[in-house]
Structure formats: structure tokens, C-alpha cells
Length: 386
Image 1 (cartoon, rainbow, N blue to C red):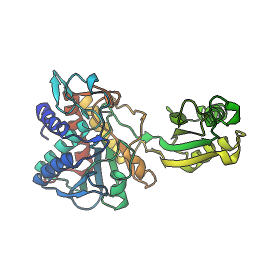
Image 2: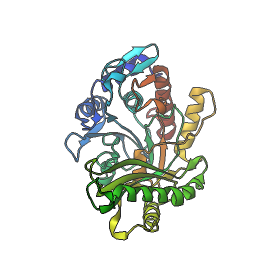
Image 3: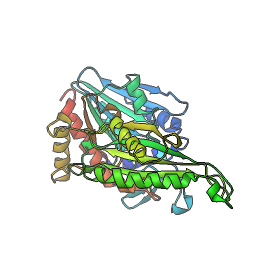
Image 4: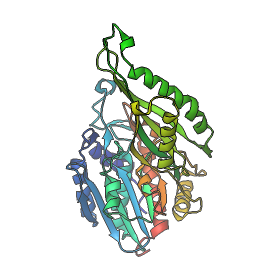
């Protein structure tokens, strides 16, 4: 193999950063077009799929038949909420020694650069000796939306046997991931003038009692559920209510984030929240629980072909035993969690640096990640002519 050139990888990453794709609005058309052009030039069969205008997803294929190895990373980013917190333009890559700064440098355009290098170098070397090598660069990940990798699965544009996501994992491996449920709880009241609050029925006070019930009755049960280092959790992430300070509020709502162990179901988690609200003692006609979105988690086999290939590659390149990490967030792998395939997450960079001002990635880590990708792919598919 040709060892990855850190400078060439840095140049590619700079090109990706220079094509903004923040959500909102999540427009990935410019970066998708750039990736599609390079992949076609490398000899891949390339298609761009979009259910929503601008949310472009690029799929590139090389080879035929089984096994089907799919690499996927998202090419959208979060938005820049506080430009003043950045030391430089977040859409222009800035180099400082081994550090390359820019929006998406870690999450996850760094992985996109490493995967694009792999795609080009593997094609240049002759392509897979066995099976099909697929790359899917997708949008709509940052809003947990349905128009990225989920859409590609729905239309059977990708049908992996081994799926490798590109979330930053410090060049280690994630083989298990919790599921997620988002639910909204709404409390109704009766408005009145603030000068006579007893004439009304405060929805905010009702919501306060509901939150108390959730924290008192449900949270302790969740805290007792573990699967290795993974734990069931609940977080109230949003709240809103009332329309004016001098009025008794007639409505209040919260949105709840539940993280699920791989053996928990979205339906079961939703029923737990609804049951807790029902048992709170609040009038049934004045409270409502709605399912917003949710997907189950997954847990891979320690002896899977993908795990074995990546373990060997990581240990060869780093000179140290592989570490299995625990994911805090959720990846696009959740859409395939019940498909009976092997799902892994591997990418360069420290995930803690993503979604923060002055996001950066170490270019030497980027090169090490690219080499690990090559070695694992060669082990899984072989290289034609070798």
C-alpha cells in the first residue's frame, strides 16, 4: 500500500471544510458534488440521491457481489452559533502545526477525507479482489433526520453486510450503541390575569409536578439499568410555556431524550414515560405524551469479521491493543440495527472536540486513521492482482 500522505489528506480536508454544509439548512449539494466528481474520476459507479432538495447523498461502488462493505460518514455539520468564539473563519481551514482547524474538521469531514483517500487509493491499487466496496457520503445526520443514510436504506441504495460509520473515535472502535427516543409531554391549564392567579390553572405548575414525577418514579429505574459501560438515561432537553408574564400560562411542554440499551425498545421506553405521566395524578384530559422520533441501539459480536479486521489494523498501526469505546451519541448505524449486519464506528479525531468552537483534528491522527482503513479493507476484501 501507499502510506497516507498527511499533507495530501490535509488538503482534501481543507477542500471539504471550504464547502459549507451546516444545519440548518443542511444543504450538502456543493460538498456532495465535489466528492462525486473525485469518485467518478477514480473509476467508481457514482449516484447522487436526494429526497429533499439540497440534502444530497453520494453513493459510489467498486467491484461486484458479496461481501458488501459499506463505508459511510455524514457531510453535514452543526451551525455556527457563536462566530465570535472562533479564532478564525470556521469555513476556511487553518493550520497550526499538526492541528487543522475548521467546522467539521472532526465531526465528520475528517472521516470523509480519510474515506475519500481510501476510495481513491484502493481503486488505484486495482480495487477489491472479492465483493463490493461502497462509499456513502450522506447528509441529514445532525438533525437525526430521515433524508440521509435512512433514506438510502429505504430505497435500497445501500445494502451492507458490514457497515462502517465514520464518527470520530480517536482511531479506536465502537461496536455498541444505545438507541434513542424523543418524546414531548404537553400540559394544559387555564389562563387568567396574573393579578388573580387563583382564577386560572397554571400549566407550568402542572408541568412542574409532571417533571417531579418523572424524576422521582422513572429516573431511579433507569439508573439501575446497565449493559457494560452503557446505561439507560433520561434528559429533559427543552421546555416552553406561557405567552406573557402577566398571564397565568395555559400550556407548557417539555421534550425528553431517552437513551436505550441495545435490548430496550423504543415502544417500551415510550410506554414507560406515558405510564409515569398517567400515574402522576394529573387529569388525563390535561396532559398529552407524543412520540417524536426514535431508533433502537445495537451491539456487535466481538468475533465479527469487521471487528477482527479493524482490531488487527489498529494494533498494527498504533502498536497498542485496540480499545473498544462507548458512544455518547447516536450514529446512522441505528437505521440498520435490526438488519442482522455487522455495524462498526471508526474515525480519526477526538469526538469531544466536535460541536465546539475552534474544532480541530491532528493531521498525523488523520493519516493513521486512513492507514487503518486501508489495512482493514484489504483484509476484508483483498486487493485485485495481489
